[in-house]
Length: 480
Ligand SMILES: Nc1ncnc2c1ncn2[C@@H]1O[C@H](COP(=O)(O)OP(=O)(O)O)[C@@H](O)[C@H]1O
Ligand SMILES: [Mg+2]
Image (cartoon, rainbow, N blue to C red):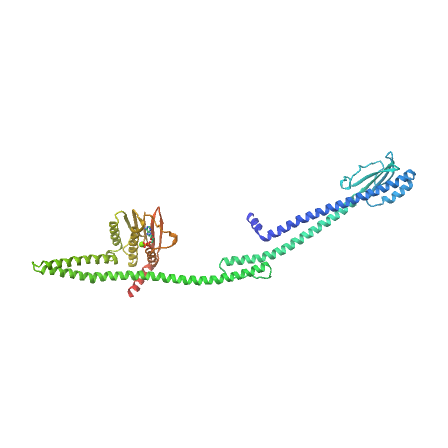
């Protein structure tokens, strides 16, 4: 009930009609009330004036007849007067207040109370009296009563007419207001429906202008606005499509370059191992033979051979470390878990102030090669970031295969990201991580705060599709 009432009250149509009708009723009531009081005053004043002049006239005329004791002529004269339509009674009393002539509807003995004004009458008859004097000598009194019924009839007729006119006016106003209100609100309703359609994304709507008034002009402006919005939205959609396409291409490019980079690193590591490694071994063998075969006395040859052995051994170490950086052989030979353990162990040795612990859960030996290298590179980059940016005391790495998804979390208790994270300005390390995970159809996100440090969370679905996709991508990258 309440919401219905509230919605009715909020309706423009209801408010318009209600306010116009209320104002109309108040104004017309005031007008009718004002007219009735003017009519009442006019009628009572007229009656008082008439009564006063009549009684004056009768008092003057009666005095002469009373002096002459000619009551018969006086009565004739008064009989004509009593026929006046508003006159109810007429009494002539002598000096002792005895009725000498009594005409009309009053008994000669009764002396009604005298009224001062027709507006202050209680019994429906306006009673007045006038002394009869001749040459200053009192001769008696004239008493007259004027019935107010005729005046009341006239007043009530005027009042009824006024009220009828007011009612007709109110009804006409209601009809006209409803008519205009309905017309107005119907068109506004069409506009509001069309605006809701536009809000819902339908830009093909247009509203009829119908007339050239304010609502018509608003409708025309609305149509132009919708056309403009539609045009701009189309442009925006096209731009968005282009941007989306560009983003997709960029993403593919980054992912491809990451794959190519990995492949190149792998090839380079293999080349270094196969070619340079063999050569160094050969050089070392030759240097050893030269040293062993040289005569005892020729110290210079021995020294040179030792120098060659030292340098080549140094080159071997450098090449070995480069090979490890390019592609840790343990990853291919012993798998992800061992490669990560080795990486974390080395990192702990290089960063004695920070302790990194790890947890491996589930079967991590059956992941695809691309997943392995991605996880390995992400852990590597995270550890590098912790060294560079975190000033952390503890690092926790957790890798969990729950057979549906692979979850990796790396969190440290360092200072967190000092850069404004809302600036969306990621470094290449974080972008690389995101792209690697995106290529595996996974999700990547990070949380950072000065209290809790920095935390990276990764979830990769382990469905057959991922594996198929992985092997396809690898096959295509091998082919290039
Ligand atoms: N563990 C971390 N602790 C604090 N800040 C970090 C951490 N890892 C990354 N960051 C912040 O994120 C930024 C982006 O990192 P990254 O993409 O690896 O780029 P880079 O290391 O080259 O600056 C860093 O500059 C650093 O401000
Ligand atoms: Mg980095």
